[in-house]
Image (cartoon, rainbow, N blue to C red; front, top):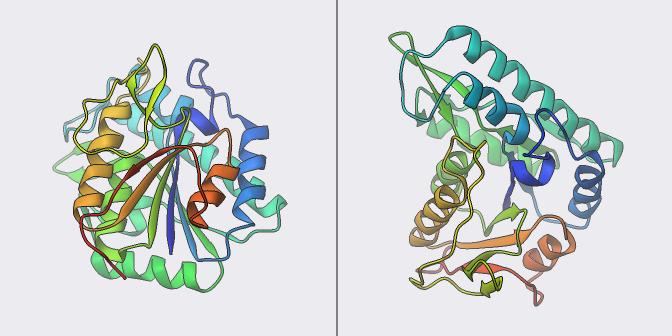
Length: 251
């Protein structure tokens, strides 16, 4: 099974509010057709969820945020999710819309529900979930990032491969020269952040990828603008990107 995160900076233009990159989404959908294993997709909020999160000052910490902001963020993520689902359907794939409330209780994953996601993926459908604003309890809400969802799902389902499709070739040791780190073994990477990202940006991705690798699974960072690299990573072909090598073998 393959777990894929479609970063918000790939599926939207993060510099411009509420702007999907429809052509890129369609090209990604076409590439996914070349993968014969079960797939689970998680997508980010990009200039949809993140735009409103910044506007209403909502973050990953559980707090009493503006309830109108929560409603607008949730509605916005449904809009973006629909664009992804429409593209997958148009390209003859069978997406299964999966809001994170289907498998989360507060900030904790429900193991039994996450295991159902695997059954859906193995049936031939493609579960598609996303980062969102979630209810925590006691009138508190929080932003659950797509990157955090990746770790929750990976921990329970142990996918053969976890892929983060980014707007970069991978992780750089130097941003100016774009010197790529092919395998991350404790180097200090160079990170660029986007002011619209309230969920930790590249730093959070590296943190979550490192956690997944420590559980024994390989994690690949690839450029989602070149979706053939996703296919090459799945097929174990030589590809351009950064790998976080799993610490032990898993099934």
